[in-house]
Picture 1 (cartoon, rainbow, N blue to C red):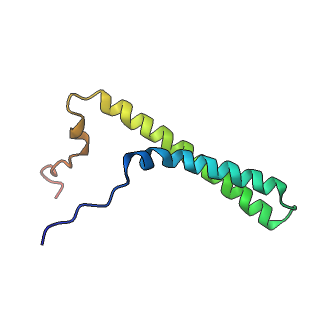
Picture 2 (cartoon, rainbow, N blue to C red):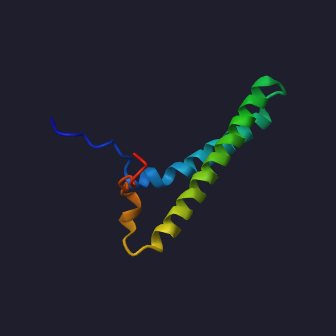
Length: 89
């Protein structure tokens, strides 16, 4: 049997995910504003804040990874697992 490669998202979908999280979070915050006060409004509002934060964290981590990768001569070397050193096995 051949080893299967992990499933990956297409590049446009992958690049758009943080913006999707941010848009859903903003929609949830807006929706919670128009709901009557109560547990449901609080729950949806907190979910919206969390979605916005997750979207921004993903955007910033991708930016930092790309900046780090651009400083290397061989950027693909960052994705290679190094063998364990002596005494670490």
